[in-house]
Image 1: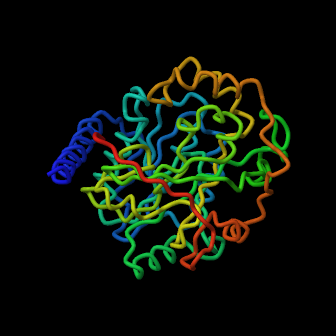
Image 2: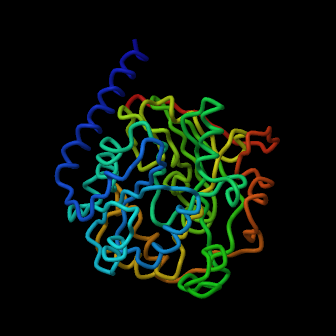
Image 3: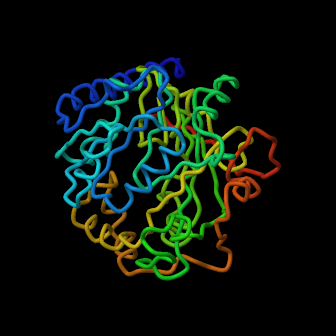
Length: 351
């Protein structure tokens, strides 16, 4: 009876999210609707952005290289030139919302509306502007090749570790000029430790660890950032992201990725959070309070970021390419891995 009750509640949770997306989608303002150009087998990318003019050129170039054929973007009232830059892109459709990012489930209601309207049947990449997806042999194998492989394996999606990159110097500095590739500007990362919990009833994974936990959350590891994501899914209109792209409904989709050490195909999201503008963005977030469900818990975190700490230590690893990430067990190729993964399970009475 308890399992049946959980399934019933999760079905209603999914329906609630889908209805929210329908309602919120009606309030999006189209600025450039080029969706008529979308073809049946196109790979689509969905994102919400705000003031990302510095990241967008590399972001767009990276995903075009991977083979994304159309971008569907929601601009949350940017004022740094991002809107004008996006309007110039011929393979991009753009909507605007001036409503609360936090009130829209951190942008996922907006993305949910677009996925519901345009994503069904397509392989869809859903990412933030500070995330560059890579996977084994990504320089030579496009997303079309990867998704054909996933189709052959009867996999409807692929998970990824969000890997924080950082400089050796104090935050606010980078190790290469602004027009250099991300991995030259922020060439360092933490290889671990990472730990994964499975949360019920949804069965979603909660992966934590890495540099942000090491530096900012040693005293309260249970609120350190969640690092697992499900950014690549063959979308169906019945699917719904629950918590950013960290978890999905129906719950069986959360079984696609168990974090580092999972031998199945997986990717890494190179996370550019710690580019020099992090100082200004953290100062702004102390006032806007839009990025966490309980912003008061993270005041000290943002205040420490403003103080320009050094994240590098003697255990930091320098990024040299995807093969190194495979060797470290941070990316799966479909081959067996002997890297142990600390996996804990806990149950929950409510969602």
